[in-house]
Amino acid sequence: MTNGIDKKALFKLKAEPYLKPISDLGVGFYNLDENTAILRFQLSNTKGPLLIHKNNLTAYAYFESSNGSVSDVIELEVEDSNKGLVTITLDKDFLQASTSTKVRGQVYIGVNNVDNKPEYNEVAVFREFNFEVKDALINKISSFTKMEYIRMFDQLKTRIKQRVLDIEKAIANGEDYVAEMKSVLQKGIETLNQIVSDGKQDIQSYIEQAKEAIDTTQTDSINTIEKLSQDTKDSVKEKADKAVESIETTSNTATEHVDDKLSAFNQAVEDNDLITNEALSEHLDGLDWQKYKLTNDDGTIKIVNLESDIEKLNAMVETGFFYTTNTPGLPSDVSSAGFLKVYTRKGNSPIKHVYHPYSQNKIVVRHYYNKWSEWEKVSQTYSDTGWVPYNTINGVEKDAMFKSDDDNGFDCAYRIIKRGDITTRKLRVNARNLTQGVTFAELPSGFAKHFQKFVVATPRNRNSGIIDVNTNGELKFNFYYNTTDWTDTDYIYGEFTWHD
Image 1: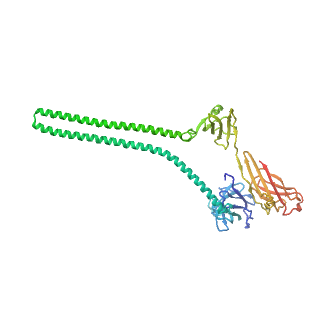
Image 2: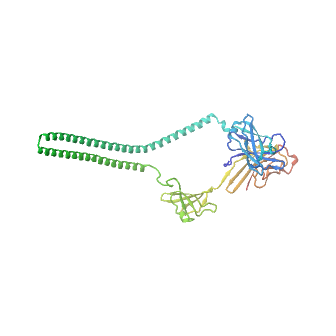
Image 3: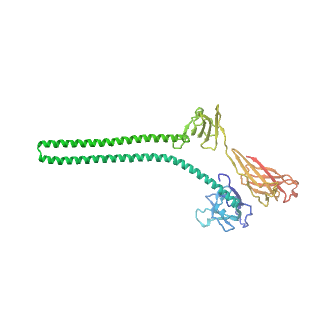
């Protein structure tokens, strides 16, 4: 319950042999309460509060709704072992299952028998207690209102879808450039492969032609050798030399042909890369996006040791997020290690330093206008319980007076507001059917840090009504004049405020 919105009800249970249930204290919860419906029990006997600790005793609770819903047997949490205080947070599913019913509950405690000897077994069952579970008003919202909410969220859904489509379209434009570059590269590879293939075919064709020429020449030479003399053989050799020369010429021509095509392709690739890079660069430069580096490349912030030097702090004029140590000039209660945000405007003129100490929930700022200001706190711890209703006891009637539309009287409730080191406590009283010295309510123990006493409003023919606020949470009523004339319809009404 770190947010302070829990709703706690206190039952005082005594270990005594009386079966009569505890009177209905008016405790109630709602079926939408979640982790806030808390029951607190103060266990005691004739000697005073029971000393409860998990090492010697274990406390359990069991709940049963009038509609048949039941809870598990749940172990209670020890809140204050010296005062016998134990608590339990009611399960949300059980509250929903018990909607619009009364719930009976009972608490059990047992001694932890470490020796496992039957003669040492001790179990105490406390008297039953009751509370109600009501249906939250929000569950009664009309279907028309629900349709209005559905329509509102449907319109919001449509807008979100359109934004998603716009973003996808923008991303697609970038993908088109990438796809175009990939297409150019693929075409270049295909062209190169075609050139190599054509070159191989040309070389093979020239080789085949040369082989045919050699075979033809060889056949003619053999025939001539058989018929002609040695002079004819010389002629054959000359023809063979010419054939070899023809092959070499043909091969060189094919090689030069391939080299020319490769050179042309490389030049085309270079020209296309230049054009593509220039187009992509112009496109990126034309986009509206922040080109300033606020953090490290991996997203972490820069760490700066200011060495308690105010000039080093004053030199922090570059916009960004930093983690600084030995930060100078801070108030005495602010840690010198923490997160620093620097905000600047055009011209690199510093505007403001915002500092969050690492281990404290505080914020301090300083700004520059002709010169740097001192650090100034802009935050403090704040909490407010809001008005928390409480129940009356011992037959006293609550919230009975000034309830017409014109009066709009308030109900019995208390409130705690904390601002930094100052705690403000407020108490509202609206009750009747009181008697001299009666304890008419029990607030949480420690609600009042010191004993408080207030004069409370009474009917015109009554006076000197006094409210005592004890540190144990008890509210008592006393009056000092006309005690014999006080009736059960006479009332007390008032609101009181004090500070710790």
